[in-house]
Length: 148
Image (cartoon, rainbow, N blue to C red; front, side, top):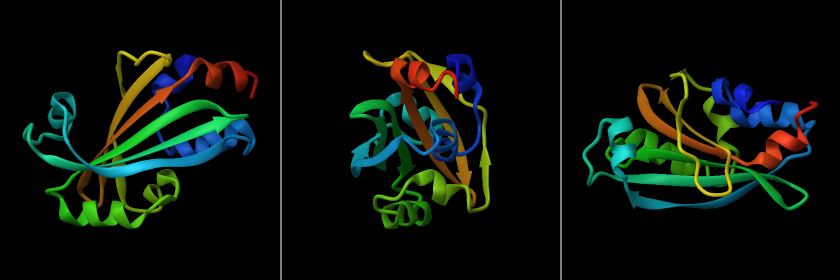
């Protein structure tokens, strides 16, 4: 898969990573907790800069090499979505989100952090509640699964 493919992909990232890798990518729950939104996160979610959010971070890796890091960010002020995300614990978010009434905007690209080749964000509306997804992909994802 090319980097261009991932720049424009919409839908469950979890399901697509499983399909592309033939189930060989392993999912890991990294952490979850409360944090104050960054300026760009607050702008994307149309919240004030001091808004607290629940942030859940996960990774997909193959042979101990990280291929994708993803974060789901829900404003704490949105109590229904906030409670729901907290209840999901360490399950892959894609399996849960795409089973509900959800709308998704096209992804937009950001400058990737060091060690990543692609950083994209997507805004989802989960039963009318905003969730911001931030996904960073490594060159290993592109190289390993390019022929899939």
